[in-house]
Length: 442
Image (cartoon, rainbow, N blue to C red; front, side, top):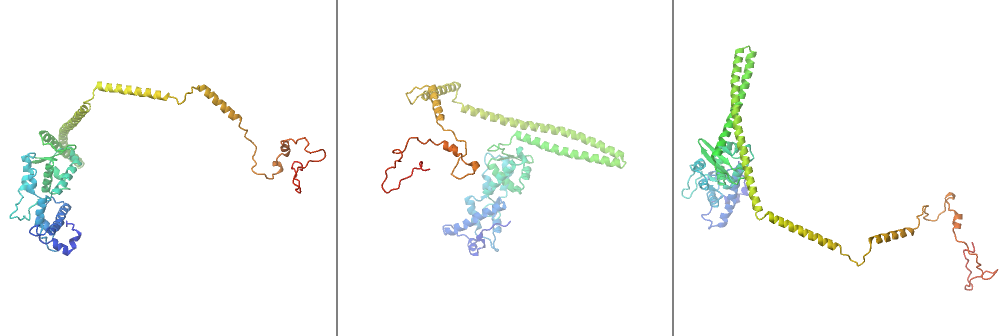
């Protein structure tokens, strides 16, 4: 796959500068040096990530970044600078980083020795064009992806796997066997896997969920691996036997239809033998599966007991300064303070704001009298229709004038004259007309 070039790749003037050789030293022209390094180093790392390359060579980089028939002249200097910064590592240096006491001799023989046999040295300060350089950043990302792939697969219940099983599990992530070895090296450095060469098999043990690092491969792991291997073999033979039994049954039917009874009986005899072998295989398989089930239950019980121990230790640490006598004393003190608070509240609620000591029954009696007197003073609510404005109505809706007249007060019988026979006219200003009294001139 062709690399993804930056936008300035089409700028001939800019690329002519970047494809030119470096100065002999950065001190000669630091701006020239830093500008080229700032372009090529990120581009090489980005290209390796896009290609999924765990290691690169100088020849490969020169080929991938050839432009218009010309290869960059300073890529050797760029690779040396990347080695100095740690963006690239020689395989020898990368492998030496994990050759510690934690890695056994068998593990070094498994991975490290094949890698060292392919290394080449630097001669005269010049890099070998075909020497591989690993990209640590990409290897770490691939190692994390492989570990996640294992934990989300059905093989996560199997702590010990063969190298072929691991390669089959991760072939979509890491197709090459040498690349897988580099990833296993990184996982070994992170203490996430443990490797062991046993006879003609290479065994890989992954760290289990919940643990920070993997434990070394022990006899128990090998015993479980052998049981699982036997279970797989018996299952394959059992499947093959069932298929053979079905085939013999069909052959017996065919011979019987063709009239060859003897051949049909021979097929049935062979089927009986196969069924007997199937029964024996099934019994062995049941036994092995029962043992594996008990081992799994024992492992579960061990984890439960370990959790109990942690819980007891936590409780002991938490209750270290707590005793029954101290608890009872604290409860008694709390009860005393609660009783004291209740007494204080009761005392405060009995304090009056007046010196009057009035009986409650007398107050209720007075309140009832006030309510009864208020009810007696209220006028009766009229029940007839209300007239909002004077207007002429029909005869059947006219007011009863006689009733209205009867409700008026009586006219006084005393004489309102000043002297008999002559009405007394109020004194007014001369020349003013006398006013008529409405009650007299109706």
